[in-house]
Length: 259
Image 1 (tube, rainbow, N blue to C red):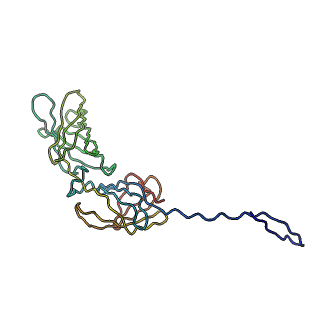
Image 2 (image 1 turned 45 degrees about the horizontal axis):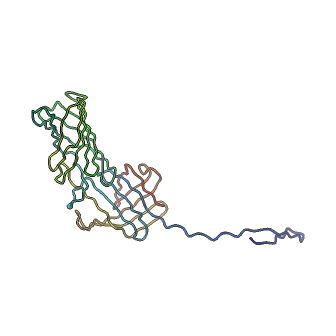
Image 3 (image 1 turned 30 degrees about the vertical axis):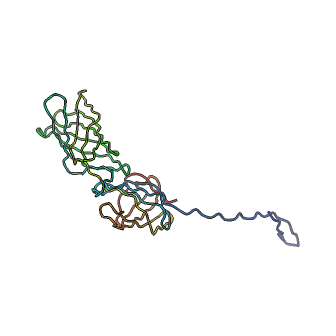
């Protein structure tokens, strides 16, 4: 603290105590962090503490593109029939059903939920809807019949094998029967998934951008791209924005932060 003299006029002076300003603290360099799920197509992106000019990394999964390497991230193709084989344990063979996946909703770099519909092949009056999830090598599905025998339900959990087949590990239905469910080889595929370094990072007030490229060993190796984002608040859906090479993709869940 120091003393200062203030003249009030008519030669009258008083002493005032004046506080000295504290030295300014250096501002923290902003970083981009967080994860978001994207639609059109189904994607998931994670920003691993990205800062300027080239620190951090970018992790990414596209659940609609098959990779050329064993990425270990399994996905289901939408709009295509997938065979589901059910053995009701009656000694009368396999009941073949078909599942068509209608939509995928990523929940992580290695997981998603899905919706679908299907029918019993020999008698298509047996229709059903399905909801399920894939997380790592675990596939779970809940089936509800909507046509003949409406209201019948079936739940099963299976393991995804290296050839894309599914071997059931637990089963139950609304009639409390013992049964088994499986899916043949090629039912699932390994999706494009990678982590890559970043460069040319730019940071602004609630905005960030960077360049990156698909690493060698994956499909489209060396393909470069530019990502730009805006942190508009939380949650990410409805507040944040995500652009790749000028094309905006809708954020459906998650949150990104420029801080």
